[in-house]
Image (tube, rainbow, N blue to C red; front, top):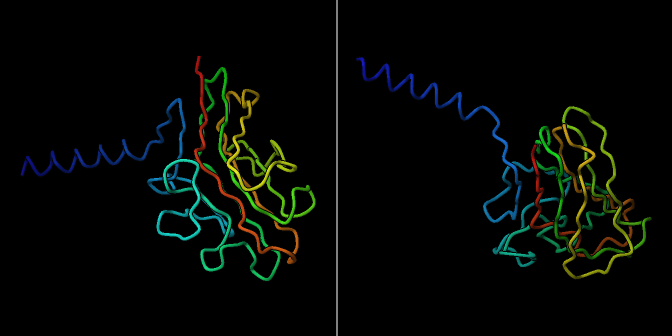
Length: 188
C-alpha cells in the first residue's frame, strides 16, 4: 500500500514538472521529427520523404504551402494560411536572431500576387507585425534569411510564415517551403 502511494505521488509530481513550459536558449526546427509545437492553417503541412513533392533544405522534411493531391496551391478559390512557431522566450535575452531557409515557386516575384510574409508577435497580442514581405527574390532555389529580433528582448514571441494567394487566378505553381528554422538567443 505504501509503495503504491509513493508511485502515485511520483507520477503526480512528474505530471506537474512536464506541464511547466521549458525554454532553452536555442530553438532549432528541421521538421524531421514532426511539427514540434508548430501550428498551421490553410495548406501548410509537413511534407516528408513519402510525398512526390518533397523538397527540403536539409534532411527529407519541411513545411510546405501546397497540396499533395495536385503539387500546387490551386484550390479553385483564393486562400491563405499561416505557419506559427511555438512560443520563444526572449525574457532574459540580450540578443536574438531568426534564421530560416525557404524555397518557392509562385505566379511571379512581385508584392501584388501570391504574397509571402515573415511576421512576428508578442504572445498574448493578436496583432502580427511584418518583419518582411518577401518579393523580388530568385525562385526555385533554397534561400536563407536572417532577422535581428533584439528589439523583442524581454518578451515571449511567436514567428509566423503567412502565405496569401490574393486571388483565384494563376495558382498552379508549387508554393512555398520552409525549413531549418532557428532562433538563437543570447541571455544575460
